Image (cartoon, helix red, strand yellow):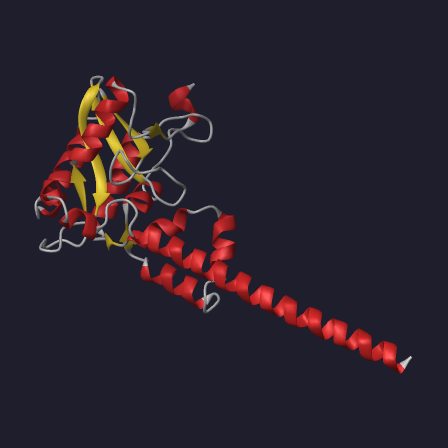
Length: 245
């Protein structure tokens, strides 16, 4: 009897060692994956590093961008007739990249009398810029992706966002929200997009070492900051039913 108990103890001890080993490995793999997601989100939309590597992005650092956006949106609020606004998501960076749940790009399109008037995006800015992130009209990649969406085979995988009942974006309320956001002086942070991941992704991101603390620190660090994802998600207002019935 004593011998059988001894054998059982040894078996359970061995199993515990094996299980502890597997749990440790699983935890390390999960932690690396979560860190990878944080890194991906830090560079999602358009990051400063990518902007600096391409001279075509120099206009993103223009200190007059916020003024131009403010002037345009005030005009929209004064003269909304014939205008509409739409929100889109697409591949980030370039046509050659994949669009995933972690890496994608959001922006607005303003249409007047059925034709493109302006695109609008919250973007990172070059290092030499006075700005640390800004709202910008007519970013070249946004215009290109929208025009190819209308006239080609949509290589940017542009997709229009619609409300829960299929409604469009409220022109006046959304424009007002963007103006309000602009006045608050949000700075750029790639991790701001983490705020808009599905709830179940937030659950496992709590496990990044040290558990809870790292995730909470990332959320706090993104407060008062935006990227293209958060800027659209946190300013968009859907039309009320009376507008589309």
